[in-house]
Length: 244
Image 1 (cartoon, one colour):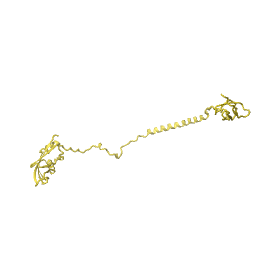
Image 2 (image 1 turned 90 degrees about the vertical axis):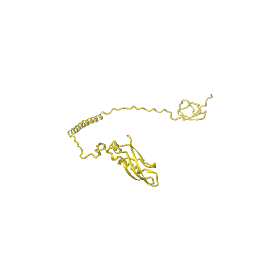
Image 3 (image 1 turned 180 degrees about the vertical axis):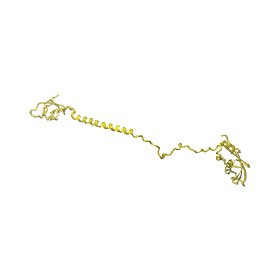
Image 4 (image 1 turned 120 degrees about the vertical axis):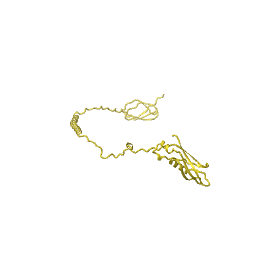
């Protein structure tokens, strides 16, 4: 390899040599670099290199050791003495107050409480009261099946089933109602049928009054076929008692 041309240096008189440096532009070795050089010219590539003016090592930071001073006993001792003196003064007073309150509580008699002069305004639930009313007797139940028949042609169009109301004999049992009201279970009615087939007049012939009322209401709602003139019929209601 050909030797690189020797670089030109700008320096001051009285400088001393340093180690060679490398050109930052072309990599050529620049020798004879002096300490006081500021700008170096590379004769190979023509680059001008500026050297730092101050290349002295920075001083290392100094570490100062921490010193721990012992507390001043002369300032701590009076504070401790003052605290002890305060406790000695306060504790007896606190004990005296507690003893006084205890004696006062023991000497005070217990207050006796009596019932209020007026009753409480709260309503008493109905479940707490005992009812003196006599319960109503259950209305007797009798199962029955009505059947109707009449004299004359079969010209019935609508039959209203009789409803027997035995509330008036609620003082009787179901068995007693069977043996009285339904003892004679046949009711006979004489009725007058108008030309429209409706019943205008009803007369009872026989039967128990309760059964007669049921049969009469049924007859007034019963309808026959229309006719040219009014007619009279005898309706027979038979109440068949069913087993319970």
